[in-house]
Amino acid sequence: DAGITQSPRYKITETGRQVTLMCHQTWSHSYMFWYRQDLGHGLRLIYYSAAADITDKGEVPDGYVVSRSKTENFPLTLESATRSQTSVYFCASRDLQGPSGNTIYFGEGSWLTVV
Amino acid sequence: QKEVEQDPGPLSVPEGAIVSLNCTYSNSAFQYFMWYRQYSRKGPELLMYTYSSGNKEDGRFTAQVDKSSKYISLFIRDSQPSDSATYLCAMLDTGNQFYFGTGTSLTVIP
Image (cartoon, rainbow over all chains, first blue to last red; front, side):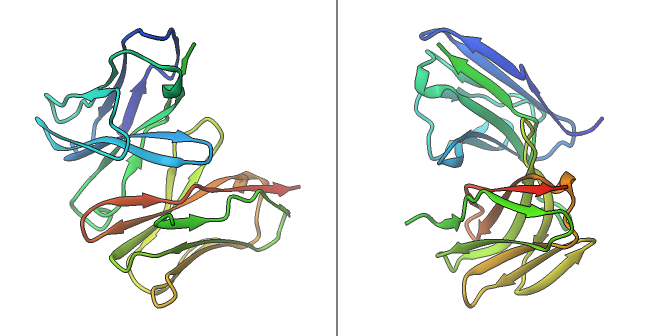
Protein backbone atom coordinates (compact mmCIF):
# COMPACT_ATOMS: atom_id res chain seq x y z
CA ASP A 1 0.00 0.00 0.00
CA ALA A 2 1.14 3.53 -0.73
CA GLY A 3 1.96 5.78 2.19
CA ILE A 4 4.54 6.33 4.89
CA THR A 5 6.08 3.40 6.70
CA GLN A 6 8.02 3.85 9.93
CA SER A 7 10.19 1.30 11.66
CA PRO A 8 10.58 0.18 14.30
CA ARG A 9 7.15 0.96 15.72
CA TYR A 10 8.34 0.37 19.28
CA LYS A 11 11.87 0.53 20.65
CA ILE A 12 13.45 0.46 24.08
CA THR A 13 17.08 1.49 24.27
CA GLU A 14 19.62 2.46 26.87
CA THR A 15 21.07 5.88 27.55
CA GLY A 16 24.06 6.58 25.37
CA ARG A 17 23.18 4.14 22.60
CA GLN A 18 22.71 5.17 18.99
CA VAL A 19 19.25 4.61 17.59
CA THR A 20 18.00 5.03 14.04
CA LEU A 21 14.34 5.42 13.17
CA MET A 22 13.52 4.62 9.59
CA CYS A 23 10.98 6.32 7.36
CA HIS A 24 9.97 5.30 3.85
CA GLN A 25 7.35 6.90 1.63
CA THR A 26 5.94 5.57 -1.63
CA TRP A 27 4.41 8.80 -2.92
CA SER A 28 7.66 10.45 -4.08
CA HIS A 29 6.73 13.55 -2.13
CA SER A 30 9.48 16.14 -2.18
CA TYR A 31 9.16 17.30 1.43
CA MET A 32 9.67 15.02 4.41
CA PHE A 33 9.58 15.83 8.10
CA TRP A 34 10.36 14.39 11.50
CA TYR A 35 8.25 15.44 14.47
CA ARG A 36 8.22 14.38 18.07
CA GLN A 37 5.00 14.45 20.05
CA ASP A 38 5.01 14.95 23.81
CA LEU A 39 2.24 15.62 26.28
CA GLY A 40 1.83 19.33 26.77
CA HIS A 41 4.03 20.22 23.81
CA GLY A 42 2.15 18.75 20.91
CA LEU A 43 4.03 18.13 17.68
CA ARG A 44 7.47 19.71 17.46
CA LEU A 45 9.53 19.73 14.30
CA ILE A 46 12.95 18.13 14.58
CA TYR A 47 14.23 18.23 11.00
CA TYR A 48 12.81 18.51 7.54
CA SER A 49 13.98 17.94 4.01
CA ALA A 50 12.87 19.71 0.85
CA ALA A 51 14.45 17.16 -1.50
CA ALA A 52 17.17 14.53 -1.64
CA ASP A 53 20.41 15.82 -0.09
CA ILE A 54 18.67 18.93 1.29
CA THR A 55 17.91 18.99 5.00
CA ASP A 56 17.28 21.72 7.55
CA LYS A 57 16.77 22.07 11.27
CA GLY A 58 13.42 22.49 12.89
CA GLU A 59 12.48 23.64 16.37
CA VAL A 60 14.23 20.88 18.39
CA PRO A 61 17.18 19.47 16.38
CA ASP A 62 19.76 18.98 19.16
CA GLY A 63 20.84 15.37 19.59
CA TYR A 64 19.41 14.26 16.25
CA VAL A 65 20.90 13.67 12.82
CA VAL A 66 19.10 13.11 9.53
CA SER A 67 20.07 12.21 6.01
CA ARG A 68 18.23 11.95 2.73
CA SER A 69 20.20 10.22 0.05
CA LYS A 70 17.04 9.02 -1.72
CA THR A 71 13.73 10.82 -2.11
CA GLU A 72 11.78 8.00 -0.50
CA ASN A 73 13.85 7.54 2.66
CA PHE A 74 14.44 9.90 5.55
CA PRO A 75 16.08 8.19 8.55
CA LEU A 76 16.41 9.92 11.92
CA THR A 77 19.37 9.02 14.14
CA LEU A 78 19.76 9.71 17.82
CA GLU A 79 23.52 9.70 18.15
CA SER A 80 23.63 9.16 21.93
CA ALA A 81 20.15 8.64 23.31
CA THR A 82 19.08 10.48 26.44
CA ARG A 83 16.00 10.00 28.61
CA SER A 84 14.63 13.34 27.44
CA GLN A 85 14.39 11.80 23.96
CA THR A 86 11.78 9.33 25.16
CA SER A 87 8.88 10.26 22.93
CA VAL A 88 6.76 9.22 20.00
CA TYR A 89 8.29 10.19 16.68
CA PHE A 90 6.30 10.84 13.53
CA CYS A 91 7.62 10.98 10.02
CA ALA A 92 5.55 13.00 7.57
CA SER A 93 5.60 14.03 3.93
CA ARG A 94 4.11 16.78 1.85
CA ASP A 95 3.20 16.80 -1.81
CA LEU A 96 3.47 20.23 -3.38
CA GLN A 97 1.27 19.29 -6.31
CA GLY A 98 -2.48 19.29 -6.51
CA PRO A 99 -5.20 20.54 -4.17
CA SER A 100 -3.71 18.82 -1.15
CA GLY A 101 -0.33 20.42 -1.62
CA ASN A 102 -0.74 22.44 1.52
CA THR A 103 -1.24 19.52 3.85
CA ILE A 104 1.10 16.93 5.27
CA TYR A 105 0.58 13.23 5.81
CA PHE A 106 1.89 11.31 8.79
CA GLY A 107 3.22 7.85 9.37
CA GLU A 108 1.99 5.62 12.17
CA GLY A 109 4.69 6.67 14.60
CA SER A 110 7.68 5.16 16.38
CA TRP A 111 7.44 4.88 20.15
CA LEU A 112 10.89 5.23 21.69
CA THR A 113 11.74 4.69 25.32
CA VAL A 114 15.22 5.51 26.61
CA VAL A 115 16.06 3.87 29.94
CA GLN B 1 2.24 33.08 23.57
CA LYS B 2 1.95 30.09 21.27
CA GLU B 3 1.18 30.67 17.61
CA VAL B 4 -1.78 28.28 17.85
CA GLU B 5 -3.90 27.76 20.92
CA GLN B 6 -6.20 24.77 21.34
CA ASP B 7 -8.20 23.76 24.40
CA PRO B 8 -6.86 20.33 25.40
CA GLY B 9 -10.15 19.19 26.90
CA PRO B 10 -10.88 16.45 27.63
CA LEU B 11 -14.29 16.71 26.07
CA SER B 12 -16.90 14.06 26.78
CA VAL B 13 -20.26 14.01 24.97
CA PRO B 14 -23.14 11.56 24.53
CA GLU B 15 -23.58 9.78 21.23
CA GLY B 16 -25.52 11.90 18.74
CA ALA B 17 -24.38 15.23 20.17
CA ILE B 18 -22.95 18.06 18.12
CA VAL B 19 -19.29 18.62 18.95
CA SER B 20 -17.47 21.90 18.53
CA LEU B 21 -13.68 21.96 18.54
CA ASN B 22 -11.82 25.24 18.31
CA CYS B 23 -8.43 26.82 17.76
CA THR B 24 -7.27 30.39 17.87
CA TYR B 25 -4.17 31.79 16.28
CA SER B 26 -2.19 34.98 16.34
CA ASN B 27 -0.32 35.02 13.03
CA SER B 28 -2.05 36.78 10.14
CA ALA B 29 0.29 34.96 7.73
CA PHE B 30 -1.56 31.68 8.22
CA GLN B 31 -3.22 30.87 4.92
CA TYR B 32 -4.22 27.22 5.05
CA PHE B 33 -6.04 25.43 7.82
CA MET B 34 -6.30 21.74 8.54
CA TRP B 35 -7.87 19.37 11.01
CA TYR B 36 -6.34 16.03 11.89
CA ARG B 37 -7.80 13.14 13.85
CA GLN B 38 -5.47 10.98 15.90
CA TYR B 39 -6.53 7.70 17.40
CA SER B 40 -4.62 6.26 20.32
CA ARG B 41 -1.28 4.79 19.25
CA LYS B 42 -1.74 6.03 15.68
CA GLY B 43 -0.45 8.86 13.53
CA PRO B 44 -2.51 11.99 12.83
CA GLU B 45 -4.89 11.48 9.92
CA LEU B 46 -5.96 14.38 7.74
CA LEU B 47 -9.68 15.10 8.10
CA MET B 48 -10.23 18.39 6.32
CA TYR B 49 -8.35 21.32 4.92
CA THR B 50 -9.42 24.75 3.76
CA TYR B 51 -7.81 28.01 2.76
CA SER B 52 -10.57 30.54 2.92
CA SER B 53 -12.89 32.04 5.47
CA GLY B 54 -16.27 30.36 5.61
CA ASN B 55 -17.49 26.81 5.95
CA LYS B 56 -16.47 23.58 4.30
CA GLU B 57 -18.57 20.50 4.77
CA ASP B 58 -17.67 16.84 4.40
CA GLY B 59 -20.29 14.41 5.62
CA ARG B 60 -20.80 14.90 9.35
CA PHE B 61 -17.83 17.26 9.57
CA THR B 62 -17.81 21.00 8.99
CA ALA B 63 -14.69 23.14 9.12
CA GLN B 64 -15.18 26.83 9.74
CA VAL B 65 -12.58 29.56 9.38
CA ASP B 66 -12.93 33.15 10.53
CA LYS B 67 -9.77 34.95 9.49
CA SER B 68 -10.93 38.29 10.85
CA SER B 69 -11.18 36.78 14.35
CA LYS B 70 -8.27 34.35 13.83
CA TYR B 71 -10.48 31.49 14.88
CA ILE B 72 -11.16 28.09 13.35
CA SER B 73 -13.64 25.43 14.33
CA LEU B 74 -14.48 21.84 13.54
CA PHE B 75 -18.07 20.73 14.05
CA ILE B 76 -19.04 17.08 14.23
CA ARG B 77 -22.72 16.32 13.81
CA ASP B 78 -24.38 13.16 15.09
CA SER B 79 -21.21 12.18 16.93
CA GLN B 80 -20.38 8.48 17.10
CA PRO B 81 -18.23 6.46 19.51
CA SER B 82 -15.82 5.97 16.59
CA ASP B 83 -15.21 9.74 16.65
CA SER B 84 -13.46 9.32 20.01
CA ALA B 85 -9.93 10.55 19.33
CA THR B 86 -7.67 13.53 19.71
CA TYR B 87 -8.26 16.31 17.18
CA LEU B 88 -5.41 18.54 16.11
CA CYS B 89 -5.72 21.80 14.26
CA ALA B 90 -2.89 22.80 11.95
CA MET B 91 -1.99 25.88 9.97
CA LEU B 92 0.40 26.73 7.20
CA ASP B 93 1.92 30.17 6.87
CA THR B 94 3.15 31.96 3.78
CA GLY B 95 6.67 30.84 4.64
CA ASN B 96 5.65 27.18 4.24
CA GLN B 97 5.88 26.39 7.93
CA PHE B 98 3.29 24.22 9.63
CA TYR B 99 1.99 25.00 13.11
CA PHE B 100 -0.02 22.57 15.18
CA GLY B 101 -2.34 22.89 18.13
CA THR B 102 -1.69 20.56 21.05
CA GLY B 103 -4.91 18.64 20.42
CA THR B 104 -8.32 18.21 22.03
CA SER B 105 -9.21 14.81 23.42
CA LEU B 106 -12.79 13.79 22.58
CA THR B 107 -14.77 10.88 24.00
CA VAL B 108 -18.20 10.04 22.63
CA ILE B 109 -20.17 7.97 25.10
CA PRO B 110 -22.58 5.34 23.65
